[in-house]
Length: 368
Ligand SMILES: *Cc1c(COP(=O)(O)O)cnc(C)c1O
Image (cartoon, rainbow, N blue to C red; front, side, top):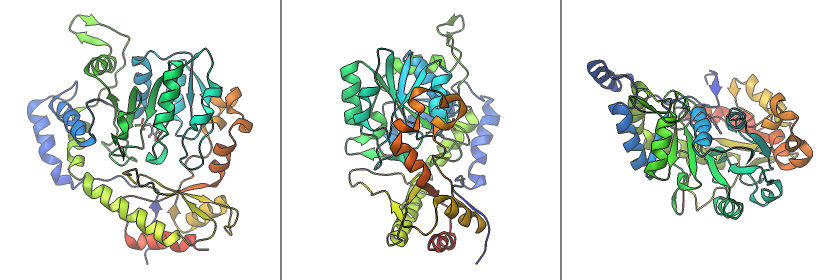
């Protein structure tokens, strides 16, 4: 059996020849960016595919997050999760906002709604939850809390492309939702991102913000940024959309293989699948419990020695990094669940082009 390296993810790329006609069209019309025809077409196609009303494309998910906070004029303090990729909290610091970290729920890995209220102060203006691994947050409870305290809700939905709950796309929740189309995400445009907007007026404001605040040739309405997605990235997104069903069905297959093969392994805990959620299988997190013969880090090393590069998402917690460590809400005593899970989690490789042989290698290495 081959022993070539297997990484936690590998970007999906359609056949190169399918992309050439898109490039030819760009070379013909010389429109490279600034809301060109592919950009418009991708916004339309994504609204249809995702089942949302309005979407504003961005150069990446981080600029989308930073701009979403600007669009809603969020200031002061924002309640968020320590169990995420650093960009979530960084988007607050880039806006001069103080993050207030609240512990997570052990079954969903998401902000624990019951813990949010105690963290609200007169300075709190918004909640920034993450649908971690594409598992939906407790959106009903979060909205109730936001309504009773007059807070905005912005979802970091970077992991949640295509996820649906019983009411439809989970991107409809909150005031805004943010997507990332980074190479490592289930739907990628090399780099890219988006904001899901509830109405055309909000989209208009966001479209100004991502283009320096320019409204027309002589009017600048806000101190905007350059967050625009280029025509090449938008064209690539259109091509990717044609392959997305295959991507999801292979991811689901892999998820099922892991679940079946690992269900009887003592000390490996797998999050339960919810019947109410149509998942996107973006990650395959497992928790290494005390009954497992190795510690999480020993297993991580054992896999590495077998040329299998699983990742400890999300370890360390955001609150461990130097720019957050000093905040009162960063103390581990207030984040017992997040701290425990960060010490147990390991994300296994999952991506459409992984072979069944590679999966067997991974599973064999996990059965110590
Ligand atoms: C990937 C990611 C981002 C950042 O998206 P980019 O497109 O890489 O800027 C933000 N939040 C979370 C949770 C992510 O996983």
